[in-house]
Amino acid sequence: MTSLREKDRVVLTCIGNGKDDVQKITAVTTLENHHVTYAFEKLEEQGLIHVEKPDGMVERVIDGQKRVFQAPKQAELTENGQERLKQDEEDLDQYENLTHRELVEKVHQVEEQVESLEARLNTFQKQVQRRLD
Image (tube, rainbow, N blue to C red):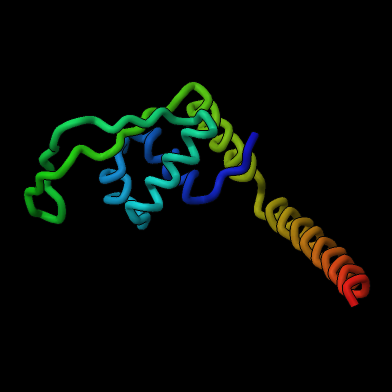
């Protein structure tokens, strides 16, 4: 399973919750139009959504004012997208069911892994630097 950026995850969740076009997603998130459009492209490339650009105009109330604009791109989850959302929820559920102590232990394990990776990265960087010098 391909890793998703946080922005992509947010967009995928919005689509799953019925916010199916760029304008609706920007209205309920802090994402800008171009971020959502880019996420649409990435998610479609991964087969998680199907995107269409309807013809015509739409009329909506935005910030208390009636606006008319070109219909924004709309997205629909594919079966893979629905499975991905379900998997993400299950991944989160595994942490929700842990006790406070188990969560603290998990955080300590992750911190140790990060420290180990940082040490290995520093060693690698030094080896590369020596070869370059």
